[in-house]
Image 1 (cartoon, one colour):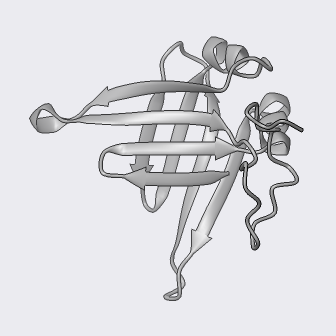
Image 2 (cartoon, rainbow, N blue to C red):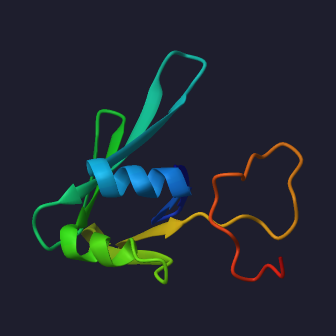
Length: 123
């Protein structure tokens, strides 16, 4: 699962096997390790309520997806789901969860064999 953070936006992109795991188990996790021994872990989990939730505590990001929204996202025609969270001082945190499509141009050092086929591809 890829994570992209820019200002007040968080984007998660999942491969085919990660989407399948999310559907079967209800959780997908990943992490990044740093040279000082610390790591940032991030999780995508089903939420039993009908709201999105996001939490950051002790170097762990947990993103919860409402069950009905997640089920709809699992259908082949759905690419992503999103939500926004109100923050202090009138700011907003934007969340986007997407299926990870293969790039149209091959990248030398990136394995995209588990990515979803790109709908813009002529293959």
